[in-house]
Amino acid sequence: MYQINKDTKTCGYQVTMPFPTEKPRLIYWGVCGRADFCQLAMYAGSVNYDLDTDKANTWPSFKNETPFGVLPVLVHGDLELTQGGAVNRYCAKLGGIYPDDPVEAAKVDMIHDQCQDIFDKIFITLKPTDKEGKIEAWKTLREEVLPAQFALLEKYLEKSGKPYFGGDEPNAADVYFYAVYGIYEHSEMGAAEILENYPKLKGTTEGVKEMGRVKEWVRGVAYFHSDPERPPPF
Ligand SMILES: N[C@@H](CCC(=O)N[C@@H](CS)C(=O)NCC(=O)O)C(=O)O
View 1 (cartoon, rainbow, N blue to C red):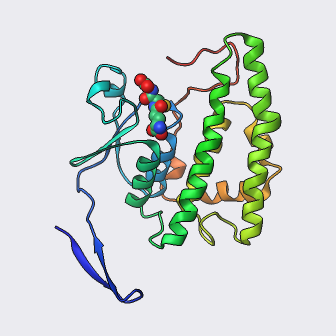
View 2 (tube, helix red, strand yellow):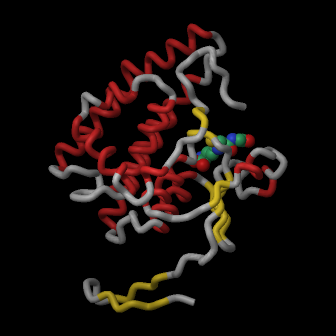
View 3 (spheres, rainbow, N blue to C red):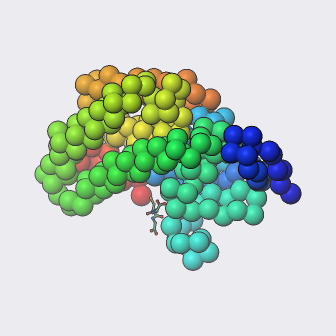
């Protein structure tokens, strides 16, 4: 059930497990949010998958049958995978945009986790129940959080001397940034204007748009939206 390839570089043996042959099925709602990371990884790697919104829309009817009671869940053959980090990495591997080299892979994981931290900040907008509080939360993101986070990533790129997080070519790390940037952009909070101040970071987003089928990607309904009077879609 697996292939063994002689790895001349390490003088060892590499065991390559084949992926299940079935089409992956991602169970998530049709919204722009947490599942954008794995979906974009699959678009960038030209992986065909089904987004099972029908099942997701029956939530929480099957909550107790999922591994840890949350979505997204990716079903691929006998594999039932949850937890964003694991799902995002698996989808990047499926698409061939995740490096084999352990050092390069660790860098991708680092950028992934940084992008998840940036994503997590958006939840501050859900806490206030009043209009003023919501406006203030989006202002904090616009004026403090995103500029500070983008500046850190820009500095990282400058120091690397490379155009992409992936080096000379974009890889999963660039896709993950594109995903989190897109979630903010889709909220109409002014992320595109902020990104203009970080040319190297902006360059990575241009590179990602050229990967696989990314140009065909259509984001779901904005779950997070900067209009304080617009309620979440559900
Ligand atoms: N650490 C998990 C968090 C997953 C999570 O919080 N999922 C939310 C949707 S974004 C969920 O399933 N909410 C419904 C619920 O908790 O019942 C991950 O990264 O996947």
